[in-house]
Image (cartoon, rainbow, N blue to C red; front, side, top):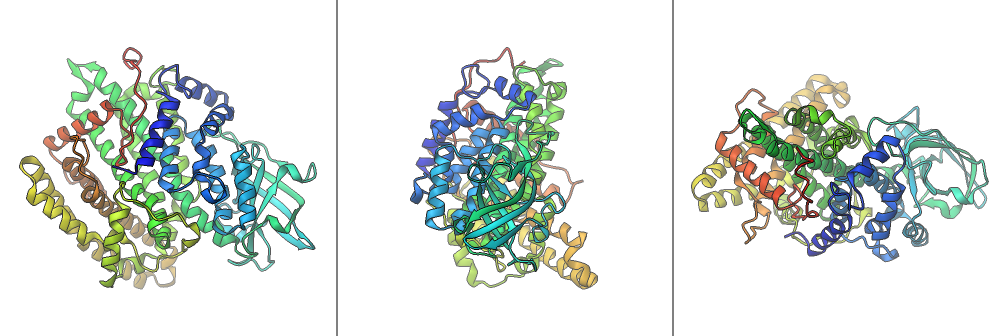
Length: 594
């Protein structure tokens, strides 16, 4: 079992919100789609979630919030996002805007911000600029020091919540020389500055998340007091990068939830729609599509399980875990939902259908997870800079610590140490405990295979063959990375070849994560559908398929068993996840789902 507190809170939120397909729900899909069509910021949904207290699970307990484990906040956001990714994103933006103060702010500043957030105060994180995007070291917004404080001048653009926010958290240049120590972070309360000194830029219309406030702001010589400075002068880039490590993990809740809802809708259709004398779900081709997409989602879920818990277990490795998750999960799940389009057919294109209309919204909303808070290039660059150290770490003394950490990282029932975001580091110094602890996971898998019988023993034996090949694949990746460095010389660090090698590293990490989760997941006494040896095999083969795309995937027996697991989770109203989260009981909408 996951932590009892997580299970209790998730169930309470689901019961509070109800089945989103039912008209009695507090967040029904009909109203969510209407808000999306009208492109109106989801004030009603955010207000009802604040009444429940969702936002307090991202605020530190010391200042009056309820945040304990990051995974509780992650799980609650995921339950919101399975209904409306726009509302979840609005909440995430305020959460992330507070992180610089959580990492380095004074107790007084944290207290002010938490007190305001608990009263419904909204924040925006003013990071990117129109001309520079993710290139923080070229940001032009200036903060000029003066007696008693600073004066801020500049423009921030493509900022979530910028128009609806009450306060802005702003990265600004405090040294003309710039550089990593040339920037600082400030909190600007829009309600406390002279009228006209903060101009809100026009709202941008979006492809997905249509109801989100995505805009910007212009600061015109805005005076702020000394206590508006977060942390120390010159610490801004460090705070931005450490905050982004948490952001990269949390934003994946959007990708997971969009895919969960899309898969649920496709499964409803497949099990109710009859063609050629049978249901779509019993046609072998459609069955394979559904199970492959389910396996992809569970790969992403396993990667996120480790990444979320890494923020508390191994914060010094966050630069690796967050970058792997932020690159792999959105890119994988965008392909997954596109594959589901084939199963749903014409219905995926319908905007007004009473049951399937939400599918096209999920299809449009999911890509935000790919570019928000660091796009694909940013995350691959972060990994590329550490790739040789990660692959070349052969210090066997690390194995024991990695093994102990993996027991917590990949077991959702294991208690977590406190969240201390200031312990995060910008480089992992060659440690990735998912890989370092791999021999222990393989040993446990071998023991489980020896005790298994029948089909399960065969499936686990086949999993072992893939697992035994993984260290060799990592060694080969190291060899090719070294060869590429020698070949390209000074061009190596920015090369497309290095980025491709970083992509492969993400696959190795993901495969290790799937193995760790399987051997660590508690074996429930109630015949729960997870863990499943057949699902693990399909997960591993789906990852390996990206290396060997022309190789035939697994047999029909495995597909049938994975389909049974998928249907059982859906029938039990369970989230498609290794976290055993119960969803609101579904209303009987069989007629609308045809």
